[in-house]
Length: 330
Image 1 (cartoon, rainbow, N blue to C red):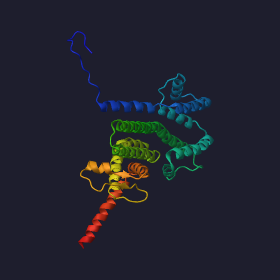
Image 2 (image 1 turned 45 degrees about the vertical axis):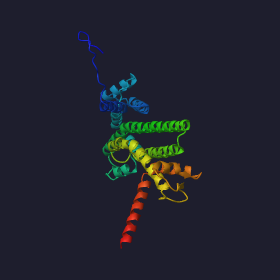
Image 3 (image 1 turned 180 degrees about the vertical axis):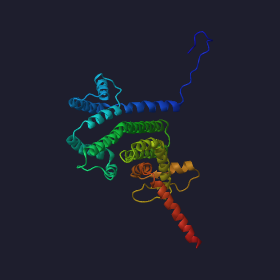
Image 4 (image 1 turned 180 degrees about the horizontal axis):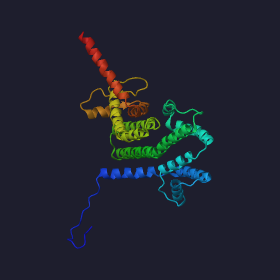
């Protein structure tokens, strides 16, 4: 790009640093999460119908109705909550009582049993309380519900982003493994190359599956939703740490099988050469029984999926060695 009226030296515009781009993407995602999705707009239309039937006219509610009818997309969860709070303020005593039980049920469904039990223990008004107490309780529950409603889309967007990244990385590793097998057939590489590449691949996939299960275990309804989303954002390191550990543990597990540290009918049994002069000869001399390949790949996946399996076995081996040494020293 050149500037008119100046020298013909090009002006180089450096791209934005990665952290700035990342912040901008997060801001766009946050703005998108603040606006009502399709199901939120359907809920808003239902409330607008109730508002029109009430025969009331309030400037705040009328402005929200006007924006919705004009097709504006800048309608937030806060607008939805404002309209519902206005409707609650206009309910009769009987309508408040009939609405309260349903709203409490919604709170239990979205917040979970622990949060709802804490609500019940907070001196929630009984059914025979005054209408002012019941209405205040209803408005407070609605505030909590809309707090959850506004953050659920952001939570789901984060989860979907993690899942898509996992799928892309698994596809990438699968394509890489296929290309490696094709290259080994074309250049006639030693079969041990493909075997160890498969071990690493299954360890990585096991790590990714373990990461996805961790994301499912992050319960959004328990505790403060902001804390839940922060925990979900902080869980991004699972996406690279677990696969890396899975690959390392799978390689260590192969050495444990080849060295005879782990033995049993459910483990693959390696046949090692009687004498070797270097590591290359040792690797090339390894062989397995026909069913050993399936067992080896299965346990490679387990090494990545159950991250404590290999470290626990190493701890047991070290503890057993220390016990033998202490017994010999007595």
